[in-house]
Image 1 (cartoon, rainbow, N blue to C red):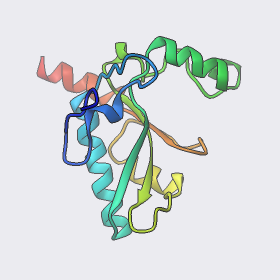
Image 2 (cartoon, rainbow, N blue to C red):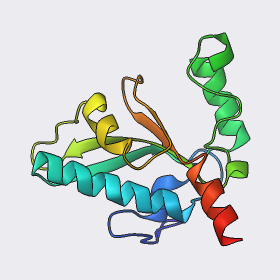
Image 3 (spheres, helix red, strand yellow):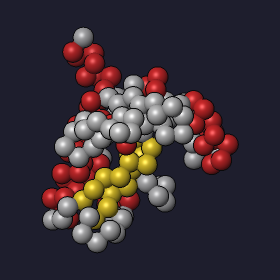
Length: 149
């Protein structure tokens, strides 16, 4: 059995959110998982098909984030990676990158189409990447934690 091979919701396993490059570390906020399930359901209803959400990046160690920054450039210099990414464990598992796939045809749904549904459930939705959508709960999770404290 692989590390983190644990079903954490109807459609996701814990290993999908881990930093595969460094020690299989995973930090996953329960609200993020709930919102991903809601996004998937909305996409399925909208398309009238079974749609899968494929996680491309969940938790990132500082080491992984630095490697990505060197490869893709830092946002402060016009690149694609933020040095204070919400994927970092210190933010509590609030961010994920993903794309959506039509399970019957294998076709990837257009990022703009996915972003419309995701924006119903996430605080931040970034859809200008060619291969994935970035979503996070940088505000909702904090408010929920405050309300429940």
